[in-house]
Image (cartoon, rainbow, N blue to C red; front, side):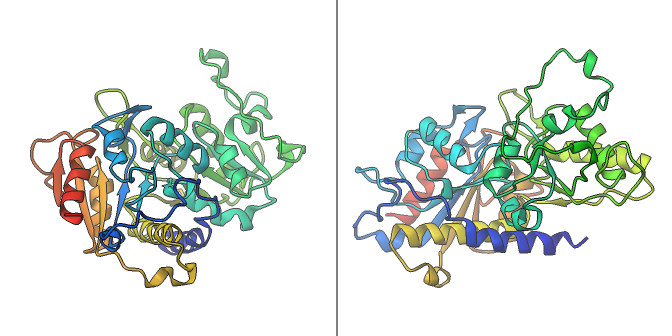
Length: 376
């Protein structure tokens, strides 16, 4: 499978759909009519979230104050920026609302690009076919919002098979089953799973690895004979990320390694999959397009002329050298990488393997540097 070609096609389609959610009333206003309007449109900013803006649901590094500086006194956006995160689990509209509440500014769904956002382009392929969505949060709701009409969360899918998880009786945690009311009421056990999407970090690794192996090695029909594995997609391939705990937590990439290792032991062929998310350069190209679309909306420009707008500089602010900084470096000379010490990276000096263009303690320092450089 040509993963590069699949990702390229996904992001090209995503570019055409990115602004489908309407901008909120505040964000849809034009840039403030100041002499530096053209200067402000000459650069854009992409922010990682976990470990940069938030730890869990707690703002860090002076992030509320930093974001308020990107708006004018009336609350209109004056600096084009997006959130570029490998995380997810909830629709972009809900994530935008939550970020707006936590940061005290008005953020639109079109400013949120999550690891699973490229899954939108697969809705035409799998619109009415059974797919399974895996991960924390509301993975089935995410896929339903993207246009998938026959999608089940792993919780719901596994519930249709008696004893598919042999460890269920020993688990103290009761995992809430998310029921997708839009899915047709059919006998899931006799319906082939056409694709599986790892939307966000899986919660129950033992069950999810077991059921995914069942799906993959039987051609989408657990309990049946061995068949051709259906396509498998990962929203990202992050090995680690920063959460509330002092040291890094294992991410979706770690889950992928575990699944891949086990599958290769029980199946004659290696695991085939497609992974999205940073540091792939195509993700950064998509981010630039989304920023251009944002500028065109804010300035009431014709979307047909989006490609004619050029940023002099694009800033990536992140905490993970191997994801955020590496990705910005691979994306090209217009990208300027800023590494914060509030997440995965905590070193006093720059990272040795993937050194950033600038290292700062917090996001507030990063934004201060950008505004001093670009707006004075």
